[in-house]
Image (cartoon, rainbow, N blue to C red):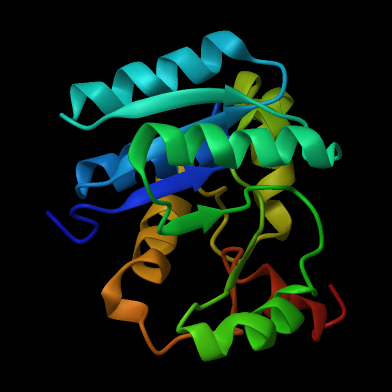
Length: 188
């Protein structure tokens, strides 16, 4: 239960979905968390409440990742609150092929960089499927496991990658899509 004891994690987009689930899982494992959001202050406050319910500390910071000044302020706020940042989870729904370059740039410092490539996850991004069982049923038909992932499932993979259990894992992409990628070679 203490895989991240005395660690501090900055998790972007931790006001909902995968980011929120990861923030809570990291707190459950002993980490304090810098909760970042862009628009959903209520969601960020809920994440903070859930982290504190796990007995850990949290600070909430609004920042737009497209604004360098705001990103610098986000890090400064986190460092002022906790003194150090050990884990960064860039929780953005974008292609992260730059993970390999970043991993090479910082590997000599003992920093690992990895990527999680999720398939369909029941987050606000897939709100229509969350709200309508018929839509969900239709959308999961192309997924070999015939279901979408829960955010907590991805949080457990993020926990592994952030922990000492993955200290020798760097530059890797973990595809977590219920087998969907396997189907692409089958003409799906």
